[in-house]
Length: 321
Image 1: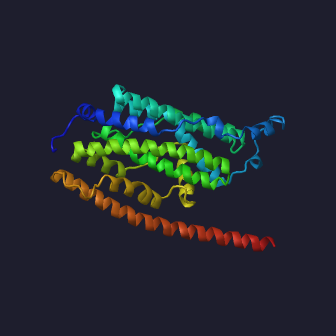
Image 2: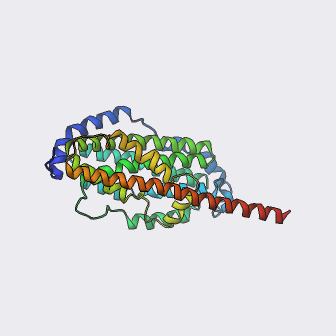
Image 3: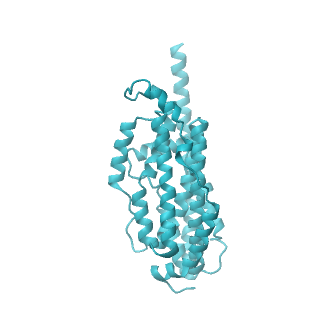
């Protein structure tokens, strides 16, 4: 189909697909309760100490694990802004509205369980965490304003974002070196994966319906992609540290997020684009080639940085002997 469709027309045409995928999601989603993933006994032990202020030595998490947990939690905290974006662009009627409500309820559990874990285990400074939450939620989140914004833009973004968040949660669980945190974040990541599948299927259906329009939205998203935590306190510094330690880096973004989704959609195999869509696909291909070069450049810089840090630790250790 070469004729562009309005957002309302697209939503109307895709509602039966949304209903099918909503039912699929409900049949696969696992009921779970945040309190089952929190080590409450540790909280009682700290309470027995007399409610002293938080001290860094109370945390069993490494600096990298703390930063990753805080970044992931603050991202989940901004749910009201994400709900507004999804509700405005997906509609609150019919299957769309049911999905928006269900997705929001499931996402809310993620922030609940992560905060309870961090507070009970004294993993991070709870006062600093609350101050960061207030700043981040006050700033909120809004999609960049441009003429292509709307359902196609939103569904493309959340497809990649949910998968990226799954990767980040899984790797954060590993660096925590705590089986309780790892189990908790694997549970959260499993939710994110099911959410991604819903959005990926809807975006795929949009590609079938309006190939040129959908590909333009996908390409625009990838060219300007940012994780949803952008704007939180210390986001840039923390993002660099997380990338340096393999929690979410450029290669993971390309090979574990972007490429698998584009392959699922058969973006470079489809034959239903017009000349306009072909131009967009060529632009996307050039972008991916540049992203591949950026991956190599980033890893070379990271390896040099890690080598310098290792050499400095060796010098400091020899000097201390």
